[in-house]
Length: 149
Image (cartoon, one colour):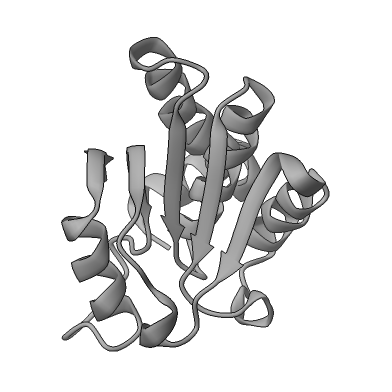
């Protein structure tokens, strides 16, 4: 955890609230700039950034966007409690969000979308990227659509 998060929690803002605010802010910007019928693909990691992506996906689906979430990893690898809460909320939306686990590089494909959101990694990443994250970054960069990171 970093200074900004620790400071917010010291002031009484929970990790779950921080995640909700981050994901909702991304969704709000997409709402301002794109049509509600557009397709949004969110590449989500298994950590805190992925949780932000789950929140954004939930909000965008609620507002009528066609949303696909590509989890880079397996559901059981999502360990952070706030990310788990938001993943469960997303999965409870049922068919309004397409959800795919991509725990192997071969499961990733170039996407044709209006908007792509990178919610894979945050400031906690260290060292060289490994598979399947490395392949996910490459596929994300080759995919068509407006990219948000």
